[in-house]
Length: 201
Image (tube, rainbow, N blue to C red; front, side, top):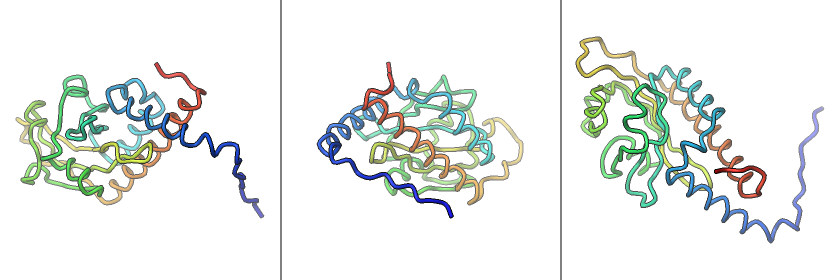
């Protein structure tokens, strides 16, 4: 019979917990305010890209709330156009489907996205693409909602090709699991930084 893992509380740490929590939150705020590209390391990227492939997505984006919590800012994208919008595009929380995920803290799985009147087409127009299908899940770390992870199936705006086959509930589950794994990886990194066990420049 396998034994149970039991780690007893160390009372000496009680006085330090508020300090550690404050340092973790401060580091998380720094990461969300533009340092994410450096923080989001090779293992985190690989984990997300593997999940996007498993979910049959063409590409995916990590969107983080800006300091005013008025906009979502793309901080990572796995596609070929990443350099043209990551860190510079702003998605208002007053419009768009990924903004609904922030408002409701519920995931979405939507096919035929371009037919949905709630879609904000600003980014599609900028990139000359059509978003055909979308998955989007809430993204939490450091104890609060920090943004959204989205996955999309796309086609060129001037393409007459048929629609991609779209996403399923199973694909959504794959992305949700990836978001949870990334949250744990980020939490570990933040705690390591807060304890001075890892450098972040």
